[in-house]
Image (cartoon, rainbow, N blue to C red):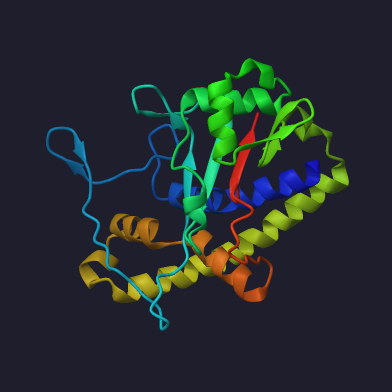
Length: 246
């Protein structure tokens, strides 16, 4: 289970890691850290204009995409990250899978989920537990409740054997090769459609690629096409794409 969890986390993070590393070659602060840099504007502004267009394939359908909602909402409605809890909901725009989970959980609900994952469901209020169960995030167990999605525990990450770590590194390397091919393909398509004045501006090229390159969606469509993933649309597995690391 631990190896499976590590593999899944590797797959989920591969796109963000690769794109950040690529962009980092073009976008560095003075101390060398990656920074999402836009064009400097008057009055301390930093922004660019991005245009979008609707797209449908030959079947009249929009391409499948995979969004990501990480963290939770605090009492004031702000998006926050709870210390020591990494919570992510990958939202699959495919057969309405994304509608089976909430857009965001509240901070107190996320803390309750972490407590349940540690076997301490007694620390959560009954009201919160009832709501989480109703929406499919938890299910009843003999000793209270248990999460209905994958949970990775940081204290077990270092228990992998060396050969397991080597295999994960090998898989990551192969995944990065595939990502590079997809990225280069997207780059060539987008650069072929940009006017010359933008193609000569590396910063604008990066902005265009950043918002158009849909790696997770491409992976999803290819996995479905080749049969690596399947979904029958019955909605029984409501927590697809949800995971927590504590």
